[in-house]
Amino acid sequence: MFQVLSSSWALLLGLSLLMVGNGLQGTLLGVRGQIEGFSTFEMSIVMSAYFLGFLGGSRAAPEMIRRVGHVRVFAALGSFISAILILYPAFAHPITWTLGRVLIGFCFSGVYVTAESWLNHAATNETRGKTLSVYMMVQMIGIVAAQGLLLVGDPSGFILFIIPSVLVSISFAPILLSISPTPAFERTAPMSLRRLFQVSPLSCVGVFLLGGAFSAQFGMAAVYGAEAGLSLKQISLFIATFYIGATLSQYPLGWLSDRMDRRRLIMMVALVGGIGAVIGVAINNQIGLMLAAFMVGGMSNPLYSLLISYANDFLEVDDMAAASGGMIFINGLGAISGPLVTGWIMTVIGPQGFWVFIGALLFALALYALYRMTQRPAPSVADTSSYAPVMMSATSVALEAAQEWAAENAEDDEKDTPAA
Image (cartoon, rainbow, N blue to C red; front, side, top):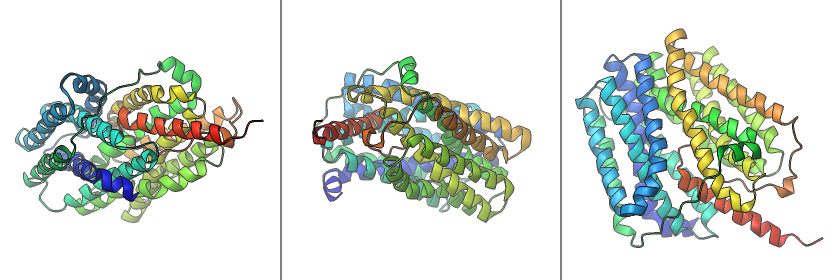
């Protein structure tokens, strides 16, 4: 761990500031939207737009990097992010916010692709797994810290929009001033969706459902909090609890997944997350909401890594990195639709529609995992791939790095296994 921090501290520091800026702007817009009088469905369109831009950026960024290089892409997209953050309060209208969210999602995705490629380039075969773990922790800490910053200013003013703009601008300094080599960018050709579904139907269906659940959490939690009458402090704590739960549960669940039938674990984790959503509906007080957020966040976020690892159990080593592109695309489609459906349900039945939607997706995943357990036998635990923690907001670069790490571990295991 010390080796990873000593070699990549500047990059990780910059990434943490980026995560703080991104986490703050998402929550802030949800609160400010109510102040501006935007309807729940209008806010769902605004929040969904980010994931549309993010998916587009993850596909376009590699070509941009190959054409003009990492530094230019990083600096150009970062400048757009800072500008858009300042423009939000100046042009408070659902249409301008939607356009801004598409652009900022595109830019953040491109910035993450660039930074993650640098991080992956700095990692060695021996440190890649630890690097991925540290990166995930940095992401979680950044998002949690962002919720605390929500309390330092008035959401109806400008200061809370200036803070993430400044943080994003500052984040470039440690990254651009400390990284001298520019890594070659090579992107693996993606596996077809048909082939990916044939390999693991559960993983494909699961990442689509989780895309909707995650985007509802990331995009609509602040909207839900405002609609439910929570105070600014309560909204901040509520959203932070999702990611605190995810941070605490990621590694215990990963440890379990390497020692049992992953489908059974996926089913149980999705079921517990669904029960958490039921608690959010049934116990409408601060303690109930915190418990619900902890359970939903603690179960839904690690499910993504579980599903990726389960897909790897049925992939050849050479195909693991290629599968990442398909997984990102399927997850992105679910993420785009998540806030839209959530907003529509909240419009029809009220704020509790937030929990109803997330719970329905997690229960559907649990049922599908149970069904898949009847369709084919589980692979031997000795033959399964290693679990690698990856957040659903990771781009194809981070996911490919996780796949490479799993492939390297699989090759090492084959070498260590004595011939029969």
